[in-house]
Amino acid sequence: MMTISGRPGKKQDAGGFTLLEILVAVTILAMSYLVILQNFSLSFRNLEKLEKVWRRDFAAVLAREPDFRTIPVKSETEPLVGEILVTGSKFQLVQVTSTEAPGQTTLLLERRP
Figure 1 (cartoon, one colour):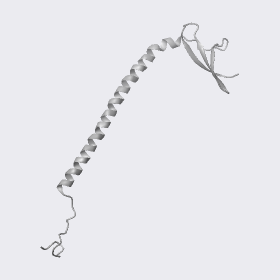
Figure 2 (cartoon, one colour; figure 1 turned 120 degrees about the horizontal axis):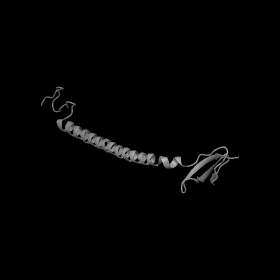
Figure 3 (cartoon, rainbow, N blue to C red; figure 1 turned 45 degrees about the vertical axis):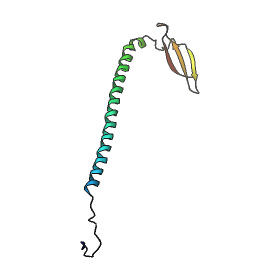
Figure 4 (cartoon, rainbow, N blue to C red; figure 1 turned 90 degrees about the horizontal axis):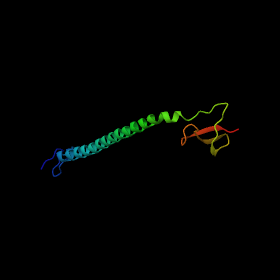
């Protein structure tokens, strides 16, 4: 039997891929592409859920905004008095209870004297 090289007895390989190898490679690529697309769609669904929760929480904060405005602001003539929670070298964190709205507290960051 003569081969392409002209030497008898040995077949020369053409050096290409068979149809089966190409089909297997395309199938593997398609499956990995589908997995990536599913991950992206799941991420987008989670982002939509997160945005809905964020909007709901933001609306709840806006609904409570009038309650926060009733807490008095520290004036120069009448300082607010409260319980010191944390004391640092330059600042202290004070918990102040509102006199106008009982039960409401706020945190005040003050420079230490």
